[in-house]
Length: 284
Image (tube, rainbow, N blue to C red; front, side, top):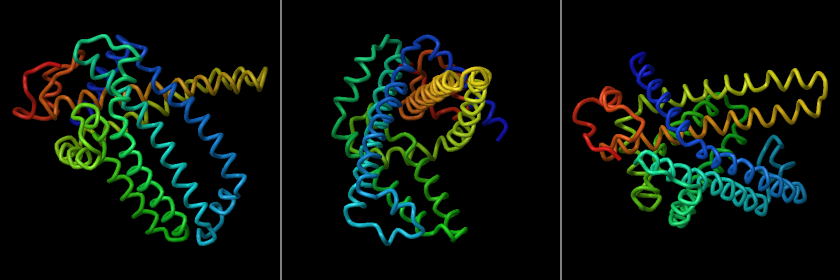
């Protein structure tokens, strides 16, 4: 476990090196965040007008009308689509960078646009699973074991679909095939995935914490200015971690799927992570 953590930390530092060589990659999660805020505000207004969120917050979901379920489904789909679309653009641009190219933001968006049907299909599946899990959680609020079971199911689903977006971008497959492909790759990388998710979570928490320090100091003089600084610094921290995760995922996918060693990554570290014979000697 400690060896896995050490290898993953090295891969994380390599991801940071790639980001330093192409800092515009961070623009994708920033744009995604802005789009999500705007979309969430619009959907919240619609939901509030219909009274959906008030009924959803009740102890039981039995009072939800069919229109509420439809609205929730549309909400989950649109939010999932925005997240997946920008993530596909980021991973596509990261793959170009790992191949030694110099991607533009337009390159990333062109790759994502060329996969719109696949992205929409995966967003529909992801939103459906998310909505079902949310409804089940709402119905089992007083069932501790049920909550644990649902958390486990959600975690397993997240890990099994870890490589879906890279597969959609690189292999041009449909969402169902991408899920199967991602599941097969998961068996070879589960240790790195688990540790990486934990590691990126810690990095994100620490980065956000550091970003809050100046915000708190400024807030003592001007609450509004402190709020603005806090939102900006925490937002940048989240965007940075999201970009590192995407680079890590793109590099990990390329090596495990095709034996490709991305520019900025070390062959020996990748060999140590996955053992001889799992990767090749080709570069991106």
